[in-house]
Image (cartoon, rainbow, N blue to C red; front, side, top):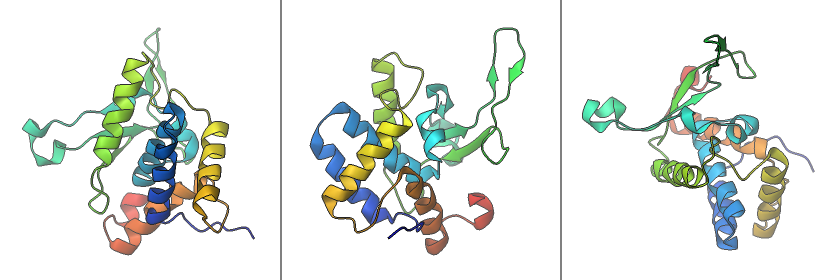
Length: 178
């Protein structure tokens, strides 16, 4: 039985908990990535390829609007010859900044803190430095099966879970999600 229904938040939490209990650094990165992907509505490839430089630190002194992390999705990057290298998202958008810590999912900034800390310790320029898409997807699927989730969970389901929950709880408008 195939489904394209979004992953519910409670299922994402149960799967993340199962992955964290595994104790390996890779499983913990998958767990954190799942929660971040859900909160920011990221496609799996956007999460896996997210550069550390795309994570903008909070600046609480600048006021409440700047007290949260920002993550730049599909950032254009400066290259050596001072030309802009433009990397667009699947929908053609560049430099789209998403704020972390949706009102209905507080605490995601601590997840991002841990990912940033681990990437810096590893001296990596990628936030998800231990993962590729295949590993991420396989570990998510295994953890979901181990938890008894009654349908096939894929990395892409989390991308739709966040927007669906945001619409239902009215924490983000449809325009913000799109």
